[in-house]
Image 1 (tube, rainbow, N blue to C red):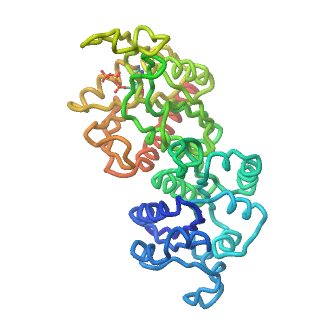
Image 2 (cartoon, protein in one colour):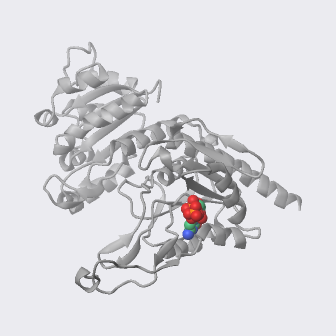
Image 3 (cartoon, rainbow, N blue to C red):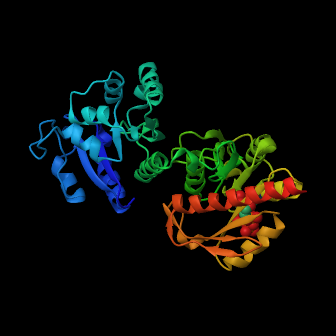
Length: 410
Ligand code: CTP
């Protein structure tokens, strides 16, 4: 994000302290920041806190002496994008009403570039009809909402209303700026249907236990975000994740490998590019116990019989025959990465395998992958998952064009 200028507005909620993490994440990506606090945000966090991170204390009033002109006008002209995190229910309502009586709202009302709001509040506030109505209104008015996500809330309860993670919000800002800068003709996937699987699957053992893996869904969500930005119609088939799915993708939430398979199979009819980035469980318990398994019945050892799950990618690869022009898989390996990736390219009938090493870690925002195809291995430099997603979709678009050109010829 080097060279990008962002205004971060902070609303008055308990999640205000997390705005510091967001400021740090945006700064780490190279963005230049100005931070604005609403009067109630100052009750949760101090203006000088942001000084240590951005080099300037946060601005808290419309008459800031550091700005000879009008702060809100100057900053809205200076910024490439504005993001408000956390956006409280009250702040959302005030934005809906067009109010501009503090420095955050006044600047937002002046912004021409992308405007993003990351809501955070108690679940009942989020689900209240007024807030839901306001959320819809804000989107109709051209603002993008990032989250909220489900998880532990300040009240000690768990539910919808938690602020999306700093990386998720930063991804959304980065993508919104890239989209705003890209002219209309730079949307090469317009009219294309891209199906992306993401995250882990969960295979039930009994009503309270399951087998799963560490996949966070970040890579698949980054792919979906870039594909949406490039104009594609995106179907995102996602296993359970803790991060917010990108705006603009059609979300199909699934749990088990078999759920994922039927969701994908129902979507591939008119699909141009399918990317299997999900970490699908290879095995599932042969039987799902109807009641919770009790250790008193099992003794010192317990065995669970597992049966193989369908290999979704291999199944699609074998059956494609002209349909499904571009098929891309992933390979996460602990050793011998490229050899295994080449093996999967053939055994699964894919056009491209995105190979990565498990040692890079899970749930991270950065990655290092190699794109393995019959023609060559392209080693991508270490970078963000959004950057990797952009290159993967470049390759997918090139392959789609080539596939269509050869169909036209024959
Ligand atoms: N995949 C799939 N269905 C499965 C298992 C994997 O569609 N049941 C897909 C994944 O989404 C990924 C690719 O196949 O795109 C490779 O997955 P990976 O887990 O690396 O390989 P496996 O085939 O499961 O082989 P192994 O676990 O032995 O490495």
